[in-house]
Image (tube, rainbow, N blue to C red; front, side, top):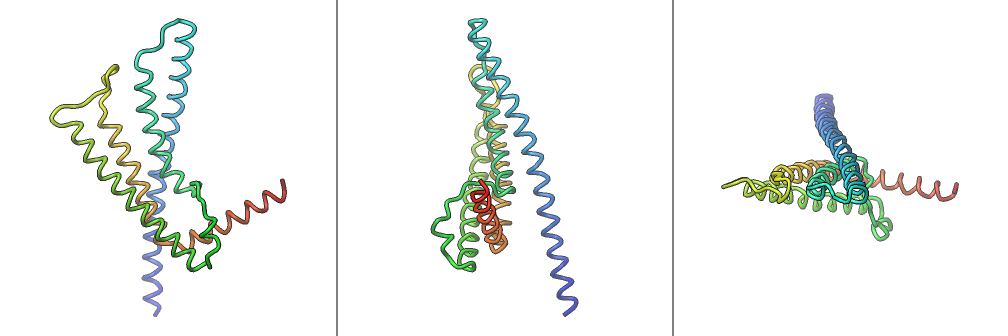
Amino acid sequence: MRKLREGSRMGSNRWVAIRKGLHAVIMGGAWIGGAALIIMVLATFANVVARYVLKKPLMGTVEMTQMLLVVTAFFAIPYTEVRRQHVTFDEVVSLFPRGLRAATIGIMYFLVGVYALSTSWQEALLAVTYMVPSMRVTDVLRIPIAPAMFIIAVGALLWGIELFLNALSPLEAAQQEDIKKQEGLENEVVS
């Protein structure tokens, strides 16, 4: 019996280590996405100033903004999932008993995880076609498109892995939903 408990603790420690490592990678991506957002804002600001003051917009700003938006969005999605700050509409599910709610949340995490991983896989395949037989580039700045597509694939992969880890612990997710709901009610009462 003692060995069984120690073995389950070791398995639990592995999951914790995997999750911590994944969260570190996702956090690094979030910082990259944040930096891309700052660059995007500065480039857009410079473009507006150039258009109105110099009467000539900066060449390729739209293309650069599009590429940076991909970086920002697809590194923000996994971070949002880690923080559990995604938007939910749980008016029906919140009426379920805790066990059924946990099962429903686990199934939803699993299904969205399948979607995220299939998106990652398909985007990676598409990115390869944008490199072979020749590299496809944007029109003005000639920026290769495939790296942005690989960022989509990596972001969706990280998101999918986090969703699957969440699907393995739906009861914890249901408890966290209860806590958020209670905090929201307390904040409304205080306000």
